[in-house]
Image (tube, rainbow, N blue to C red; front, top):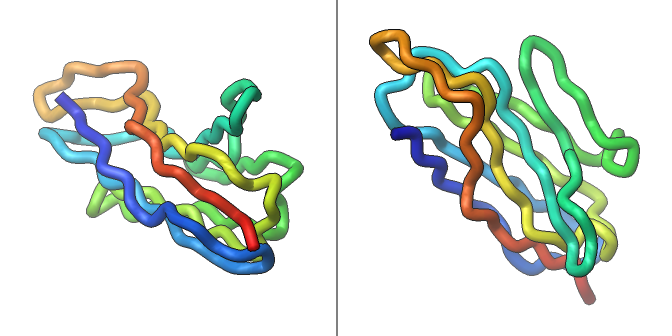
Length: 120
């Protein structure tokens, strides 16, 4: 079983920064996609950023957020700068196309979510 452990959420003032981390544990051989989604109160879950061999960002976060990954640690990061109140949401880590040592594959795993609140 792959487990995702997220960290880094919290309360920050507008214009501030936070860095989210998500570490995948288990007998993992490879992970194709790693990313972050978010869900604000009363809204649907939306893509924030995903990284495979390239990166893809939601238009609303381009130029402010940076996604990166450390394959040796099976960890994905989201550096969030110039945060706005509308960035307030629960942020969910996502990993896609996970291959275990031994060859078994699973399509996706989701984290439990970490709350980011941007408020003065």
